Length: 525
Image (cartoon, rainbow, N blue to C red; front, side, top):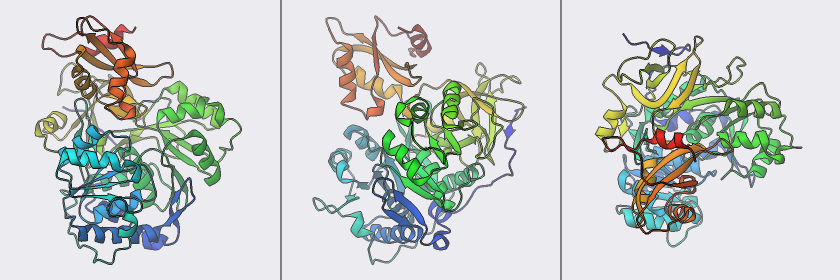
């Protein structure tokens, strides 16, 4: 009989309402309170303006031909316009597929083609990439611009003043998609993760139980909204609760620290590289960070020693963690804001409505022995509908009982705290960004001087997991490390770049041809 761990919090069932309604349900009540502040310019967008502008933009999208179920790519760094577009697209009944502002033309073209995207929203700096990607993908009808009209492209600034009638959309929140982020799952190439309105909306309510924001409280959003962590925890959740989201377009340490000081930020939601800087960078010295009460890190594992060092420098009891993945909308467990009893190294307690099993690593389908670590499997209302157009990959990820197999190895203590102890999946997490080895391997194998290649995650001197290419040269080749890194860098977003290269005589493989990645990692230098 299966051992199922459940949350100690009251059960939360599936929320059957569209995301924009769940987030902006109190916009009229909050009225002229600041919803968004541009952290660089100080520009303010009130709740009333956010609500009205997203409604007007939905009308403009509908007038332009956007229909229910259409996929709209949102290719932009963080900005105060990002949520206006996001909720405008949802209100038009369409689906947002977020595209990283760092995406290369091949990466973006692949996402546009796979998602059958018909419409693109980009920023002036990204227009060249978006145009070429749309050309390669085919099927894109229009590119809208978050900025002044350029090259005849319709401007979101003008569209949000549209006088067209607002579309009336009937939503089936269980079935209709809200967001289509791309994830590599446990391995392989990026796949479209089908998250319904109910998936996303329910996870917001689940997270709210652990991370409440006070009405009017400023929250600093520096992690990208194009990542599900940023979209959920730094945008949707605080706006639902009436907080003020201070938006930064990118991470710059000086700007980040200045924003904490200026807006008296109380809670920070970050990734391990930012924790590292807060713990060790000399630029932190002399800054007034006394407003900070709570720091939570997620998106990648955080070393317990680093967390302790950061907490000590900031004068906090602890720096805590959360756990999730794109396929889970994304939250699974969190250390609650205001709590003081989280043990070192834990990724928190299960969110309401979430069930967890630990599966035996040697006997798939069976539970691990009591007290032993096992592969984490999750069941709950936040589990994705599946991968777009990939029924086989979906079946490999979600079993017949509805359990999503995460590929992470964890354990539960007697008090309900979850710990991540290892990964069985091959995905590399570089500073919180997912890097699929298979994608990099395919690029490497296309190089005329490379006979074979594998990519594994290794840890650098600062404790970051980085992609290392293990390369077999073709006979007669004098290919060197710099050439390999430059070749890959020209084809992928910066966070996917190969950071180390090691040349070998042969890539170790099993009898079935599977790369023995653990051998490559354990071999060191």
